[in-house]
Length: 568
Image 1 (spheres, rainbow, N blue to C red):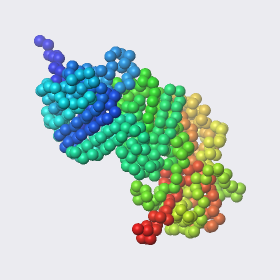
Image 2 (cartoon, rainbow, N blue to C red):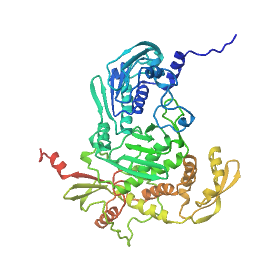
Image 3 (cartoon, helix red, strand yellow):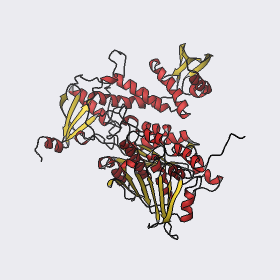
Image 4 (tube, helix red, strand yellow):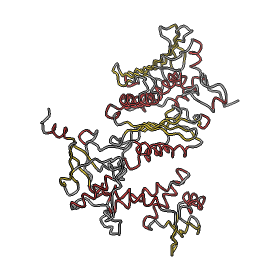
């Protein structure tokens, strides 16, 4: 007697729901994707009881007739694709035909809809079984109601420990959908209270204001770049406002929100030295490319996709963001208006007091600033110092504090980075080869790329199992910085399948500039202060040190007078 049986459709849908509908937010995401695919211009999301009692999505899209509503509850029934060609050229957000039957199998779900040519109709399923159907008073479009989610899956309900946390996840989904569809007007309510609203006017400043608030929107800059058939548009919040987590980095590929570790890291790298350690930006990256180069049929939740040119896109994103900040320079942060209180950082965490080595001089006798046409740091007068670390300046716009260590570090960084970047890859021979023993994975990468690594000045020779001898190194590189370059090359080859020498030199410039910069609590003469200020004026980015800490902060005269109650 056969032991293998074919599961009935209801049980199959409940199994599928374990992957498709992991929490209320994932159910909401599927419903919103269907509403967007229906060519809606207005979408309403009404939540009750943190989404556990009811999720209702109403759109004004093309709608469905009676027959299509019934078909929508069947597994793998979809209007999005019809053949293999469509599967490899997916333009819609949904296409698998799993979401509605999966959600219906673990909830009480009602779909009411009307097309321009059909009568309005409503169908209700409970736990995957047809419960009722009848005509319904509804305008053109679709209204989907999901209530008592997971009522028949007690284990899933126990997994949900905090209803408030589930609401925050659902709002994240709403935010992503709003940001990815600026042409659609969204309304989000919870227990009758409006939480989010956008107007579908395709204005990103209005959109960021709706999602993050006015102060964030005021710090928005955008930049567009294109290479061959890949178009990247970045909407970036200046680093005066940052986050402690990466959640506010949104990546869109052909209007689909995705999670991709490599691309998210490329955004962080694009911000370069503008970010403090362990702080992350608010950014929206739109990527448009040929649908045939993307495979979205990787996971039922459609959050993960596969690219044929992932590393190229990561590099394009990084360059796009760096060009955005180059073309639209930052300004001095007004500390009294910033989102977070300014925290004093002494600079000692970046210093090694015990290191006593020859360094490049901060002030060279022949130094003359290049007088850029657009001066990024306005003129101001030196009036004193505070705590032996902060230089005080003033002008008609207010009071300025300059961290002398961070300022010297920025000046040295830009000079050293340029000096290293101008050098050719000249090698110097080591009298005694340096032996390296790598991990198996590292040795494999190195062995496969010996000629490429040699082109950057490092000549390795295999000596044994996972052991290599280094015989030459670049003439500009000191032996004390050698390990960083060696392991940095291997890391780049592993993550990007290419070598970015400028990135390596960037880190070396940071290390060298920090060790030789003026330390905190060191008294400066007036000539040294003037030289420091002139050097800072000549910097490409005088506002942040290479590690992302602020160099200059500003107190406006208006804000100071408010503190002293001269202005009410």
